[in-house]
Length: 256
Figure (cartoon, rainbow, N blue to C red):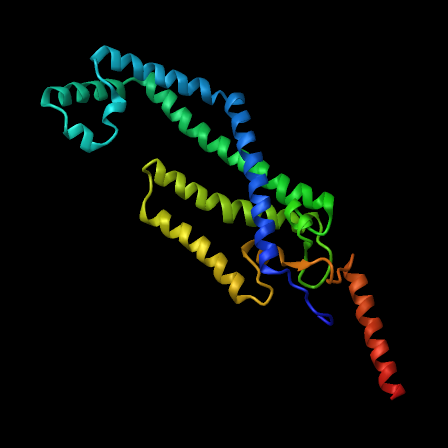
C-alpha cells in the first residue's frame, strides 16, 4: 500500500469488543427466551419434571437430594436401594426419555439460533447500516473495518467475517464443545479444540502485521482508525489514486 495503514488502537478495539459483546449477549438472551416459548422447550421441560416428581412420590425419594456420588454414598443401604430402584424405574419411562431428549435438542437449537441472530444483528446488519464495517462499539470508539488493500467492505465480505468467522469458528465451535462437556458427551478433546481456537486467534493477532484475528484473515479485512485512515469506495478508485500519486511523483522528480 502506498499510504500508511492506520491500525486501530488495541485498547479501542478491546473496548469496542466489550461493548459489542454486552449488546450481543442481551440480544442472544432475549432471542433464546423467545425461542423457548416458540419451540415449546418450557412445556417439554415441565412435562419431564412432572414425570420425575411422580416417580419421586411413587418411591418416596428425592432425586435432588443425591446430586452427586458423595451424597448418595452417605445414605443408609435401604435408602440407596430405594433410589436405585426409583432411578431404574424412571430411566425406563419412554415419555421421560422422549421429553428429556427433546429438551436437550431444543436447547441446542435455541442457543444456536439465538446466538446466530445476535451475531447477525451486531456484526452484520448494524455494520451494513453504519458503513465501514462499524458495529455500535466501533462507532463509539471511532474505529472501523476495511479490506487490507484499503477498499471499503461490502456485504459479501462482512458476511464472511461475521457468520463464517465470528459465528461459526470463533463462537459456535467453542460453544458446542462446552455444551458436550456439560452434557458429559465429550472431554479432553473438546478442551483441546477450545484451546486451539482461542490460542490460535491470539497468536494470529500477535503475529500478523495487521493484528488480524481468524475472522479478519478469512475476510481479508483489518480494523483501522477512522479519523486518519484513507478508505476507497472501489478498487478502481484505489487504482486511480495510485496512478495520480505516481504521476505527481514523476512530475516532482522531473521538476527537480
